Amino acid sequence: MSTVLHDDVSNGVLRRMKEGGFDFTSFHPIEFYAIFPDEERARMATRNFRGESLHALVTERDDGAWHLQVSKVMYATYHGIGDFEHDLESVVAPLGGKLDGWGVTQEVKGLQP
Image (cartoon, rainbow, N blue to C red; front, side):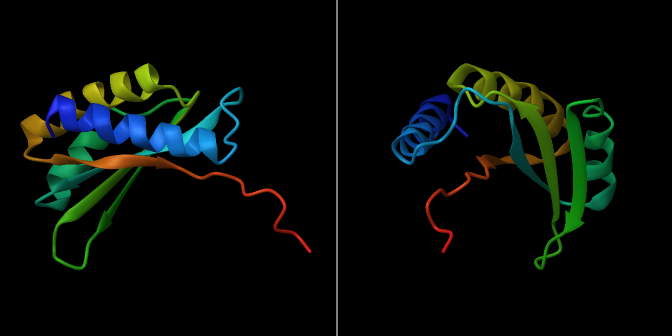
C-alpha cells in the first residue's frame, strides 16, 4: 500500500471515529490484518507478535489464502497505528504477505432500550 493512500485511509477512518464519539483517551484492541498465500508463512509472521498487549490469529480464507489478524492494545492514534503498520509490513512483506488494513470496535452508545 502506498504511503499516501495509507495516510488518506487512516486519516479518514480516524476522522469518522472522532465524529462517531470514539473514546481516544482509553486503550483499545486495534486489529491489524494481513493476507498470505499459505499457512506456513502466516504462522511464521505470528512469531514476531507475542506479548502482553499483542495477540495473533491465523485463519484460512474461502479463496485458499491465509488471513493474519494481529490485535494490539494501544491508544488509537494516527502515529501509533502508522508505526505499528510499518512494523507489521516489515515482517509480512518478506514472507510474501500483504497488509489488509486495520480496525477497531467502537462501542455505540444510546442504542439500548
